[in-house]
Length: 455
Image (cartoon, rainbow, N blue to C red; front, top):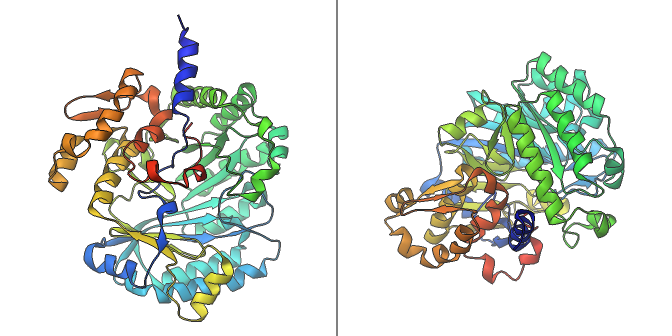
């Protein structure tokens, strides 16, 4: 007879398939070349009344080997001045998508927004307020590389209106940091968290990653302990996605230095238990928040949403993405800007529509999107919600998918009833594999190797 440990290992191996992270459905890999007017048509027909604004700052001073983001490594700060001038051109070009709509959230990601100087940030905020209507209750958030951030820099950003900040910790162990080419001071990060709270930031998030090269359980435990000691408002616990065929920098990471799926699962479980015992609430797949944080409150009020930036509280807003590679969600359509900076500049210079790739969601896409997003955000699904919204019989529509879930029930991963699909807390790590059962594209997707392992 197999031991409980053997059974757990077997289950992890069984479901450690390649699957999307489901920040959207269909995923960005299903986007195709589109004709002009995709987002404009969606905005006219079913666009939301408010806008969440995302601006991509692609520049970084140094290459981190693990990173899968769209980035440009350079130390020439003047390139950002040129880039911001094109951000304004894009604001003008996309005015029909946001005219008369209020911005309820602003998020800067990258790359690294901390590549911009305080003066450049001031100019960017001037552009935002020049072209957009900003809600008096809008939340401004920003991702920062702690290696080039000071207390004064945080003060400057706060004066511009930023109240939420996220620092990339990843791992505090020097040998792990060296293996990913990102060496940074834990004491400096702790001081930045302290400074941010004193300055008046309402939420501080720390990102950590499990599954990095040279990580062990004990090493990762020191990272978890250090992060808890900093007492952030939110923690993002990300699984490292090793996709060297897609991201050239990851080829610098030897495969034999990576933890196994079983070791990764154990690290994840350790972190979940440790953060939960400290009073953090787990949000969806990979986020934690203090009970007083708006993300935790959104979870309890069942208004949590997931988009290309992760979990958010702005469920009923369209997402307008600006900058190279940025993705917009307008009504029932997704559209992505060119991924190459040269192409991005060329389109704006020659009045060529910026949406290079995208997709208009079919009715089936929308039904499956709502199923997957409910599971990703709430860890349960009320079949009646889908039936009432779309006029279908859930069990009939998803007969094949429900049959495929039986093995998950047998393995104790999910609970099925006539009305609900429930994912117990202990099964969170399997949520991507669960959602994949409802993905109509995945089984016929010859690009499946471009997704990371679900565990």
